[in-house]
Figure 1 (cartoon, rainbow, N blue to C red):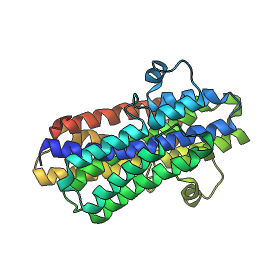
Figure 2: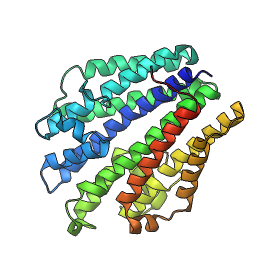
Figure 3: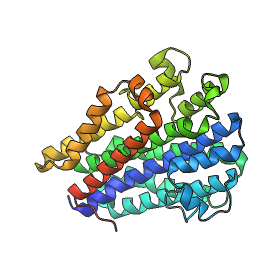
Figure 4: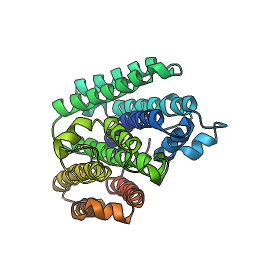
Length: 314
């Protein structure tokens, strides 16, 4: 497969996943702001930090307000990671590789773009925000469903899935970091009802509220929730699950092309690290530091995949 085509597929599905996860990050910030003991704007500043766009936001806005942050993350054209921008980029990449997609997968992508363009043509009122977030998640889910249900399991599928799970792992780590690093007002709140409500909000923002109760059959516990989102291989947004899929799809490419690259070893090393770790060890050594290190390794893997398969931007 040409590097240009592989690049288009990989980034198409990274952008789709990024759009959905930006919506989930907004959802996490919204839920946190409703239970915070601080000013609401403190939480939105934390969301910007976790999204990695705080400095860019401050270069364009005078202050951090909930309305401006939501607008910036949803529809600001100066933000290349806004929901509208990433959905548009996903559509553009999909159009570039149109002959490699089934009709259903392309139509789901195009319809997502058209609907979001209409819904985000103006600033979203606070009362409409939950419905907009749900709509983004549903539309992105329809794209994945159409793709998963109609595509051959060949290299096209593999590059798309690798893009999906690298982006998902990055965003799960960032959403978890929102809670741990900046949203808990003070150490004195740990273990209180406020702390528990905030952890519950994190689970709800990644659609894991009910599955957590199935897996752990216990009350909300920060260590269990961190374990669920980092190390539980049955949870489809956990870091361990994402790397199981990344390594699997890279393995299919290795067998398809007969070549093994640095990216294969890096992915296998991260997967092995996640399997070896115990959650208490991660917490004791610093959850925030673990997440920061993971995000850096995940980004390095993305760069190595780009080099190995000769991606280039168009």
